[in-house]
Image (cartoon, rainbow, N blue to C red):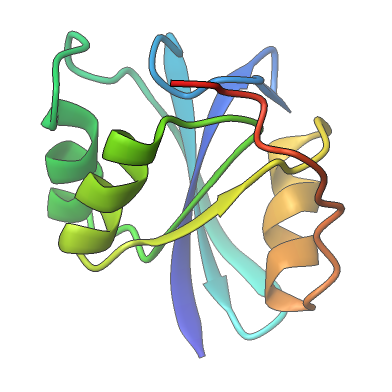
Length: 112
């Protein structure tokens, strides 16, 4: 199954909150294999911009340490699966963990 996994990053490591991330990793997976990795600069932060932008890039999943409920709903409205409360580690490792159902999850680090 092909997936495009979006992950907010800093220095290649997932950041705790996606909303103000300066970079995103977009990792294309085909089954368990990484097919393509991109590092992208997001548009300026505003309500609904990131879900629409990532949706336009074909993202199928967003993985984050924390995300507000409104943002979660906006991603779901854009047909993007949401995974929050994920342990911080390198983006590539997170994408591989996701397709293998091994994400290390805890509490959503965002409270808004």
